[in-house]
Image 1 (cartoon, one colour):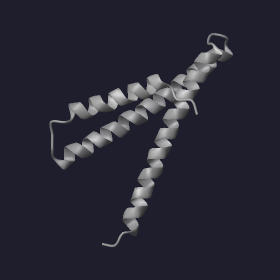
Image 2 (cartoon, rainbow, N blue to C red):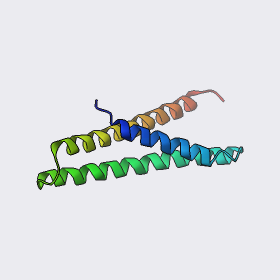
Image 3 (cartoon, rainbow, N blue to C red):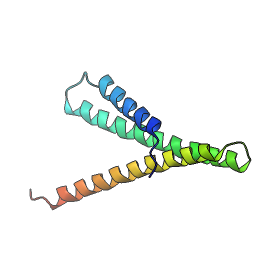
Length: 103
């Protein structure tokens, strides 16, 4: 799997920025909002990455983009999508674990 280091660093910076902006509140509602904001931003970035890879692919078909640009865009989109799928699987596993626990 090819990982675009620039995209990883961008995502990391966005996560740190979001955490720093919300560090003022200490109640559980603000923490939940922060986590929701991080997930929302990640999903938006994933959708943007998928759209970008589609645009670059179409540009390549038209002869306006190089194969390197296509590979970079598609790899970035694939990495973002795999991250979202992994998070989804972890959330489902955590939910199932909570449902199995005795009250």
